[in-house]
Length: 558
Image (spheres, rainbow, N blue to C red):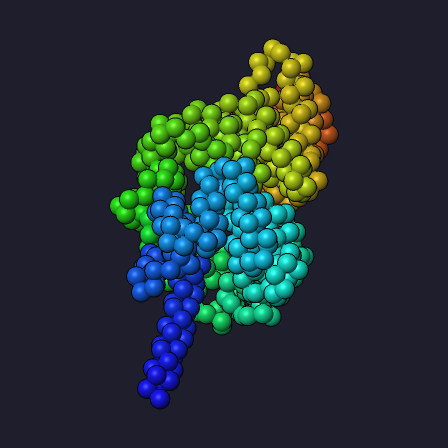
């Protein structure tokens, strides 16, 4: 009886220990999936201390590997292999380290040997090898991952677990094959609901721009496990798409609260906060990551970007320079922030230099429009015309509709190219003026209610009519006076129109009523009559009034 009782007690203890250890291993795996690497490592270390089996050592090494500690993972896998040479999981772990070290050929040879030695009868081995092929950007093999997962039921006579289906979905996602990926994640949810599977499914829907399904999946993840940190990260990403930056910022901060504030996660959070336009938060998290020991060159990058956005432009430039000096080759967004920083510092030539580098590679931002503004401000009008034209071509290539402002900007720069063409170069002035006139015509065709379009078209035609005898500006000045808001109008511009039309009616139409009307309105503005407009009221022949005056190079605001 005593022997029987002891046996029963021993069996109960072993069963209880197995259940507890199983739950604890599962807890550690959930922690690493939830971006809590230090907690996961502590959990697995406790598991190994309580039960130093080769399998438990594999899971400790796995957590170390997922956390980026390749040396620690390798040492743990080697210890596990020494403890139990016939346990194949630690061999899988060592081969995965080789894969992480970007030796795809060496890793494949090791994996193939393990599969041969186990005769593809070990589902866990096949699953972990398949997963390994999805973990690393430079050495992934999603096709082989799918093949191995699909062979598990056939070779081992065991059904796929939820985690196995998730790996299958991950492999299809790497191949940008959304349909099969969604099916695999849905199957994972049917086998065993998890926040991880719902989040992955939401990512598939987001890529397909199925936004309601995305939200539904993310919400299901939250309802399954509200402590799962990646939910807050992914939901923040979703809000950024729709410009809900404050909501995104709050979620990214919650992500850090529920994940683990390691230097790597802090730096990732800094990038997310930057995307959410929370530049102070981004700078704070970057500084915390640096203080915690982050040595990634993205520390300089994020401090540079955030510094520029916060108006600390020299500080931002200094950090970007440190990044470059460390050997990092700038990519287009780095050049954008160099450009924005130097523009902030009023070093416009340097700003344009960097925007020129960024423009051909940036498919999101139209830097030609920015360079137009800089060149126009520098009074480099020919260059400004070039940038305005490129800005329009950029929009057309993106299948965006040109608006009246696009044509007006080009026209203003071309107008000043015309104005500063030497007076004696009559053909040159005519040619340049016709280009400007065409641009204003395009703007007016889109919006004929904006008075400056007509004003500057009139002035442009004054240059085209270099003899002052064709009165080409008349219809444009008349239209200007029709659409302009008299209460807010620039008095100098009104005077210019009244003066021109008074001369036209005096010399061409001989309509003295209109002459009187325009002269009277001009004299209200300039009673001192600097141009002698009162003489036009005298029936004696008068010489033509000069057509236009060249105004200051300022773009009127719409």
